[in-house]
Amino acid sequence: MNTEDDVLICDPEGEFSPLVQVLGGDISTVIRMAAGGKDSLNAMYMVEGYGENNPIVEKSQFIMSLIEQIDKSCVSSQHRSIIDRCAAAVYREKERPTLCDLREKLLEQPEDKAQEIALSLDIFTTVSLELFGHQSSGVLDKRLISFYMLHLGPQLKPSGLLVITDTILNRVTLNWKKGKRTHVFLDEFHVVFENEYSGMFFNSAWRQFRKRGAYPTAITQNVEYLLDSVQASTMLSNSEFIIMLNQAASDREKLAKLLNISREQMGFITNAEAGCGLIKYGSALVPFVNRFPKDTKLYQLMTTKPGEGVFGGEKQCPELKRGNP
Image: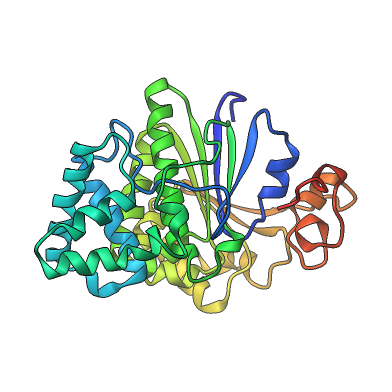
C-alpha cells in the first residue's frame, strides 16, 4: 500500500475505530453513525461520473435498495419509475439535493404509489435515520476514515451499510479522477444480499470499485448467506484473493465446490485455531498460521476477543481515553 493511498472502512461493530482513532486527527477520523448524533451523510450525494451508465438510474436503484430495507411493498417496477422521475427532477432543481427534497417531490406527485414511497422515506428524513436525510456533516476529506455504526442497532445497520458504501463509491470516483488509489474495507457485507435491490446495488458498486483504482475487501462471518446468493457467489468465485478461517461443515462443502478446493486442503479450515486458515490467491492455495504477540499495544487495539483489548473493554490505551468510540 502506497503511503499516499486513501483507506475507507465500513465498521458496523466498531472493531476498526480504536486503531483508526489512535493514528491521529491529521490523517484519520472516525465518522460516528448514530440516531441523534452530530455526524450525518447525505444519501443523495452524487459526484460527476457517478455510476456505470446513467447516474440518475444508478442513484434510483440505490434509493430502491434503501426503501427495500424498510418496506418491501414499495419496490415494484412502478415504484422504480416514479423514483426515477422524481430523482431526475430534484437533481435538475437543486445542486445538492437530499432525501428530504426527494420526499417533498414525491408528495407532489398524483399517484398513490408516490405517497407510499414518501411514507417509506419518513424514517430517513424525520425519524430514526434522519442522519442520512440531510447534508453530510462529517469530516470526509481525511486519508483514513472509519464509518462507525455500532450504535445504529441491528435493524438500521443494513441501511447504514448501503449509505456508507454509496458514500465510499463517490470518494473512489473522485480519487480515480485524480489518479489516486483507494483501499476499501466493508465488514458484515453479507447483509446487503438478503434483499434483491440491495444486492444489485452492492454488486454494481463492487464492479465500480475494481474499475476505478480501488482495492475492495469484503469481510463476513456469515458465509452461508453469501453462498445462498447467486450474485454473492459470483463475486466470491471471481475474487483473486480470499482468506478463509475456521468454517462450519456445511459451509466448507459449499466453499469447496465453489472454489474447487479438495477435501484435504479444506482440512486447514476444519477446527482451525484462531489465526490459522487458508489463503486462495489466484489458482494457488496456501495454508497459514498467524501468531500475533499479545503483549503489544497493536494487539490491544486490534483484538476483538471478549475481555481483551480496547474493544473487549478490559484495557484502554492512553491515547484512546480521550474519546474511545
